[in-house]
Length: 269
View 1 (tube, rainbow, N blue to C red):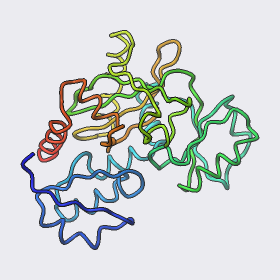
View 2 (view 1 turned 30 degrees about the vertical axis):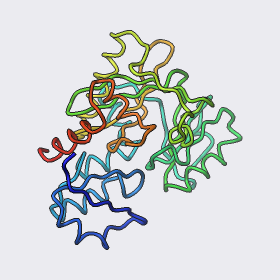
View 3 (view 1 turned 90 degrees about the vertical axis):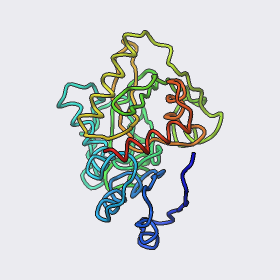
View 4 (view 1 turned 120 degrees about the vertical axis):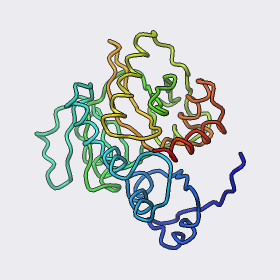
């Protein structure tokens, strides 16, 4: 693509050993997930050192990584999102839990790590243990029956909607990162008016959270065709099974064009 590139792999939550090298670069392209990578931490360090990088700035990255923060903003702005409670193990009380079926996950984590779906309250303790291995707080969210839908945002435009059909029923870490473990329909087979509504909601939450350049917004689409916001990702995946490049391709952008556009938009932010 005409860029001179150096590759850096981060093995722990620090860039101290590579910071002098990063300062000599014109641009840093982050392709990271989870804690430190997309929670605003590395973004804040880069900002403090006047290093230009892709995507949202540190504060929006931190807020979007906090699922309860995102869902609260959604509720405050009349965007449907499943009912939820946020807890740590110390303050959990069975009386707080009244969902017939629920999703339990770390409040701040990515890639569906520590994620469980339960329909029996007796399984909640083990699901909480799994979630709390990865964060100090867990999100218990009402499970919405329906279709798994995602919308990618690029430069304040919504790309074609994708429907995700995991082969074993749950879109977990294995379904996300194993080639052939999920089927993807892009554009999703839904009415144009519904597609437009979902895109509009995705763009709205992207803007409400002050995201920049690009993001990916995940929904459940129920039997009444109501879309329920689950979460937003400020550093969407860029692997061969990733959704953002798939949506871009459906919009006529090659992978190279997509990367180039992200870089150029990030330089302008």
